Length: 212
Image (cartoon, rainbow, N blue to C red; front, top):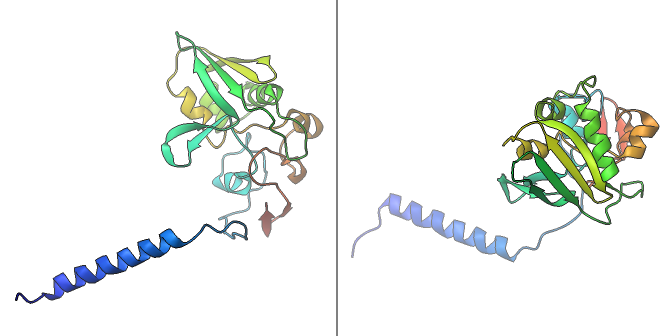
């Protein structure tokens, strides 16, 4: 009978441990709720996601807003729907039509519609508005944004542009509420952080804590 070498014994032990962990993991049920704490490298300063570029701003409000599209949570190399449930492109690649989810509401209870999408992108596309992330990506490509109906919005491009859809899925190209922008004029104040994302903005103590 052949004796096991130390290396073979070590490999066998690792495999047994891995198998036992896999079985234990398969038997555990996901636990929802609780509190997740994390540290941001710096105070975000201003909270306007359209007008800022520091990562600290993104970290401060990422869970509050939604975009038309997003990176697929199961495969970040792919693009998935978010506020838009589907989209189509014209044959010449210069017109994209987004069909929006119905029944979506802002965190304050107001209904989400194509008007919010148009106002958000008209804002970042405005030549006089400095939008270092979303605006810098879209301004070279997008000519105009039009509301087709309350649940449909159309983007007219200056030319066929392959980067358009990936840019629309950027975490910086989030949709803001028309009524919030009309009330506050921008998204700087904590009370202006009203989105359609999975988390509601709760409080902001400068230099101390941001809570969703």
